[in-house]
Image (cartoon, rainbow, N blue to C red; front, side):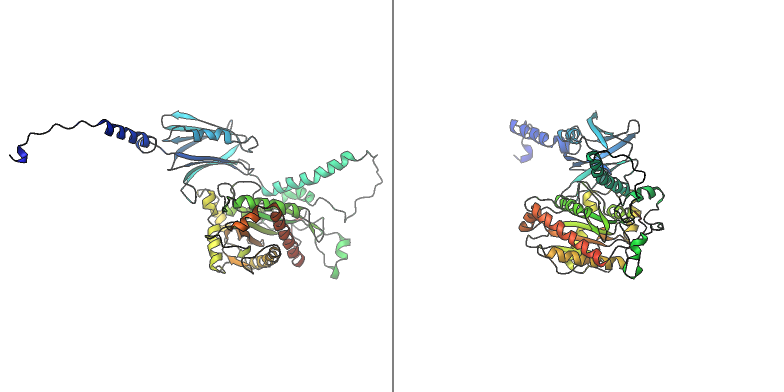
Length: 479
């Protein structure tokens, strides 16, 4: 009998084992592949005076629709294709009471497969909702940037900070002093007596043009002071000049920067060093002129590279010092470095590699490429001058010398490369790599409060030495 002659066998029923295996597969894949949607990996909230950011990270791209309501101000975002998860519920508790912009977040299942987030705001806002593709340690990100309807002006912030520092001691002194009768015959204040250098700025601020406009004439120096200068050359005095140093702690927020073997994050270390240096700058005078530090970020939040430059120019900074602590592919690399801008190519392969790495901060930190001001930022970063670069090299040389007195240098001279953050056309600008955070020994030093103090002292000495050889010009900032 041939094989074709055999009677057909009835199909075998699936075994209990195979049914259980199939059911297990459905359970394993049900919430991700078979059913629908993405898995939420993490949620984060980054508060800052300039804007607050909410980030939702997922394993696949999220699809969202947003609606903004003006009264009371709130942003509603519907995320499609997902169900409410414990990770999304965590957003409610992540909002801090002192968040300048967010009053609270509500989250719920609005419809099958649709989760609605409602962000209640403390003031009118201009929200931006956008997605970011995977990069570095991050997968897909859905981002809500909540900007105040009236943007924070860096110059106004500098004024407010200065007033807080000057009025508090004055108020304390007034409260502790015994009352005195009014003396109508008291002599007027002498021209050379110290004054609040930002007082005039506050009075003039409303009529002052921006940094790119033609500046107003400076306030004249005291005649008695000008007459006593060698050669009769009038220079700035306490009452008509304040020296502003822009400090730029690298990275921040979504961008942690380099991370050391022990988990030290670059963004945290450089912010602490910047705070220490700010205290020293604010307590220093050069040639009788008070100094004032301005930080491009004063907390843990992301600031785009172009915005850092714009801020420094808005406050008419005299210097721009960007502070970093980089990592390399091997832990053997060590030593501090100082970099200035180059328009004709990097001074070394390492400098080019580092500049390319630092210039990716916008991608890691999460820049909204659809933002309307991106063209303005790009144009701003292409206007640097030879004079600015020469001044930057002079600043970098003295800073490198002072840092070399407290630690090892990676290179004995200032290097150059196309760092985007150094491209202010009218401000001497340097980037300081304080150490290699990827080196275990140097990471330990960077974590040390004593070494952070030494770094701040060295940078302060370098800044003072620079101004001793390069006195700040008497500019329009008559304060």
